Length: 485
Ligand SMILES: Cc1cc2nc3c(=O)[nH]c(=O)nc-3n(C[C@H](O)[C@H](O)[C@H](O)COP(=O)(O)OP(=O)(O)OC[C@H]3O[C@@H](n4cnc5c(N)ncnc54)[C@H](O)[C@@H]3O)c2cc1C
Image 1: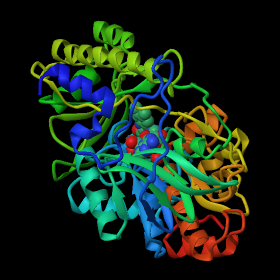
Image 2: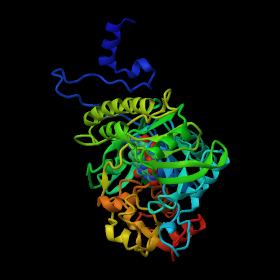
Image 3: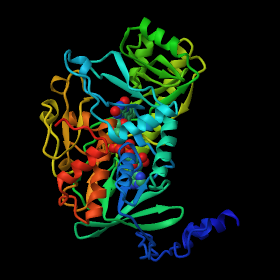
Image 4: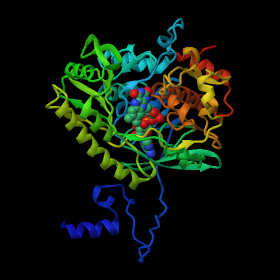
């Protein structure tokens, strides 16, 4: 077939016919003026589950594991070919399983996030893919521990765990719609190379970061656009010790943690320092920070180039401009390392994220909105699903006395939708508390809370507001979740 015949067929029949899509996926142009195209109605095959989780990222993996651990028949929908989400593409360090005990003399060290997030760490450790909970030696006003991960093995380990738990993991599958029955979600619509399908379930959890399922279900949302986006680089062929020495010589360092690196304990896994002279000036222009996190020798897992996308993070064309801009910055970042840092003359980009990482997409309106005071005062609620003790804006904002605050179940219920829970970066409207609730380990804990609750709702055939908190709490305690009281 020549090119002209190919494009003729594409218009008349849709490219699906050529790609071997199921019969019936071909559509014909009906409106000759070309002003609009009306999609014909179509019968979709239906799959049925107890719980559907949208997005196999930081929160979604844990939500699906939690639902499966409760015995729910669970489907996890992920647009990419792997699990892990922003954990594997953004920060690459899990913050934080602990309270800020080091910054508050006399306060007891306490691991405040346990349960499934800790099970993931245990599996990563067994695979040599984690620094362990490495205590900060410097910079402990910011955090008491840094738990660095191998981003690539994180994908494998979490996929294996999901497989073992019996979760139906649909990767390379985009969630594209919701089927509503009043204020109840009856099903999600997904698209993949196997065609378009309707996925029915009793309870749904949106962990898509963008809040796609919630938006399709008609939930109220805003798009604050209050963060820069980022695509972090894994920089290989570097002399890690040379880089650390360079940073020390050019402004000292203000963060330091030792942990497991390339199978050997007591190695630097976290370091942050002021960059000197031209390097600092040039790095500032491309939004690059100097922090390192790594679990491998001669590899910097976490070189960030930040960029505030003008417009909206949910607008394709605005983001397309951002994708180009950030890739230019990444190339520049590598150049700077090669030019300025001894031992990095032959450094190269070993990993980038497939897309720009957002720090916030849609903000979904929930039954409760966690406030700045809730976090700083260390407030707990009568429907807590977890405790959390880390704030990304420390030392400016810290939880009172190195303690914890609670994330209440009501903050994870999408307002106006009967059977939808949300977890991850899409909750908490105020930027200040969001700088705490959006962090990886908070998202993971919220995942366990929502996945467990969704499974119980499915079992009891009730809406998310009809679930008895005592039942949820008992299941979470059994699942290893830590509570303050
Ligand atoms: C650059 C950067 C650095 C960071 N550094 C740190 C750090 O050092 N420590 C820390 O604790 N936190 C850090 N954070 C914050 C933290 O990583 C995120 O807030 C957190 O991981 C978000 O988790 P999530 O579950 O909400 O979303 P994600 O982990 O992003 O998961 C969302 C998933 O949903 C999928 N998805 C989206 N839409 C659809 C759809 N329609 N259909 C199917 N799948 C879909 C995505 O592909 C993705 O896998 C950082 C964030 C960024 C961007």
